[in-house]
Amino acid sequence: MNFTRLKQLITSSTRILMAVVFCTMLFLSSAFPAYAYGTSKDNPTQDDEFMQKTTELLKTGPSSLKTTQERAKRGPNEVQADAGMDEMISPEDARGVVTPKDKIEKALEKVAPNK
Image 1 (cartoon, rainbow, N blue to C red):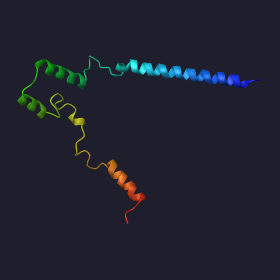
Image 2 (image 1 turned 120 degrees about the vertical axis):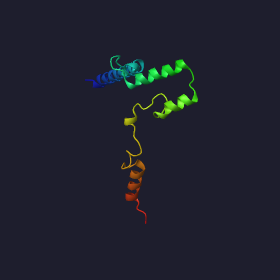
Image 3 (image 1 turned 120 degrees about the horizontal axis):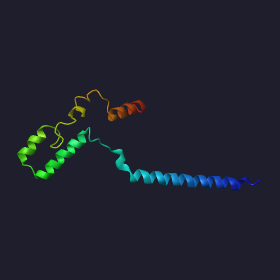
Image 4 (image 1 turned 60 degrees about the horizontal axis):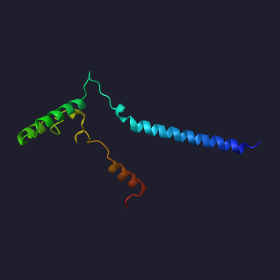
């Protein structure tokens, strides 16, 4: 029997099926990216608070320098204030951490020690 035709038919069908699946996945991932970000109106997140503050600032117009400086003193920037400050990493938190630079230097020292 001639199995080469059967083999070619199976491989070409598989290629076409894989191309269709790939194109479908590519289309769906680009067409519906907004579904990944969902917020509940019952439980507003910090992002919603940032958005509300931002829209309020846009509606009121430019702030004076003094007002902006007072808002900025409360946190890393004017809009964010102190939200999320406890989640940020400070230099004090990272004192005992080995940096990538230290790891590379240690590995190079093992490979080629200084003479």
